[in-house]
Image 1: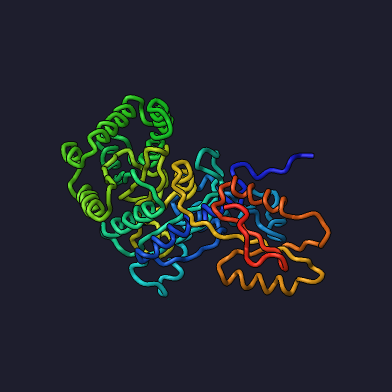
Image 2: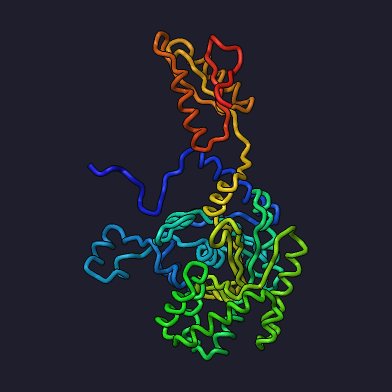
Length: 424
C-alpha cells in the first residue's frame, strides 16, 4: 500500500507552526489596517476568461485548471484542452482584485486601498520558500496615478516587516519603461521586449551565461544579449539614477523613482531604497514602477510589486493601479531562521473529569476558566483507569518540539483547587 503523503509542492502545517504563522499574519493584517487599507476577499477559483485576460504572462502557464462538470464535461469530452476546462485556481491576488473592482467599483471609495490575505496556487517547481500552494499578503491602491500610491504601499509594507521584527532589508526600485528604453537603444525589437524582461528577471536565480543563453533562445543575438546584461550590471553597480541620465534616459522616466526614494526614505527607518535596473518582476502586467524587498539572509526577494495601470482596462474600467505583496512563506521562513518569533503564548488547560458523575461540573469549570483566559479542552477519565497525565505531558512536549510557545496546564475536577502548570 502506498504511504499517504501531501501533493508534491504542498505541505501539512502542524499546530506549533500554525500558531507562528497565525501570529505573523495578524501582525501584517493589523499593520496594513493602520495604514488605511480595507480587507476584501475573493474566491480561490476564477473563470479561465478572467485569468487569461490579465496579461500575467508566464504565470498563466502555471495554472491548476479545473475540468468542466457534469453534462458540460460529457459534451466537451474528446475536444481540445480549452474546451474541457472553464476555470482555474487563482495564481495571484492581483487578477481577482481587478475583476472584483470592475464589478464593485460603484460601492467603493476612490481611490480604493485594498488588502487581501489568502492562498494562491502555481504549478511550479517547489524549492526553498516556494510552494505550489502559498499565502499572499497583498495591498493595492486603485485610482491614484501619482507616485504617492507607491510611497504609501512601500511604507505600509516596511512597517509590517518592522513590526514582525525584521531589520536589515532594503527596497530595490526600477521602472520597466527604463528597461524598454535600454532595449530599444540596443536595437532589440519591441516584440521581443517582454521575453527579454522575463529572461532578465532570472538573473538572481541563474548565472549570467545561462541568462544570455536564454536571451539567445528568444531571438536576441549573443553579442547583443551580452551587451544588454553587461550594461544592466554596470548600472546596477552604480546604483544611481544619475547614471541613467548619462545613458540618455529621459528625465520623465526617472523623476518618479527619485520622488519615491526621497519620500519613502524619510518616512521609514533604516531601510535603504536603491535604484536597481535588474529588477524586472517576471509578471507581464506590470507597466512602469517595479520594486522588490530583499534581505541579506534570504536568497531572492521577500516581497515585491509594481504598477499595473493597464490591467483594469481589460476588465472594462480604465483605472490606474499598483500594489505590493509580502512573500508570506518566505517571511515566516526568515523569521524562523533568525529566531525572531515574537508570538505571545497562550495558556492551554486540560480539564480532567469522571464522565459518569462530573460532566456538568466539568463544563461549568471549563466556562469559568475560559473567562479567565485559558484555552480549555475536556478529557473524560474513568475512575480506576490508568492516569492520563503521562499522555497529556507527552502531547504537550511534542507540541513544544514543533514550535508551540504555549504553556500547558491541567486541572482535575474534585481534586485540584486551581489549574496546575504542566510545561512552561
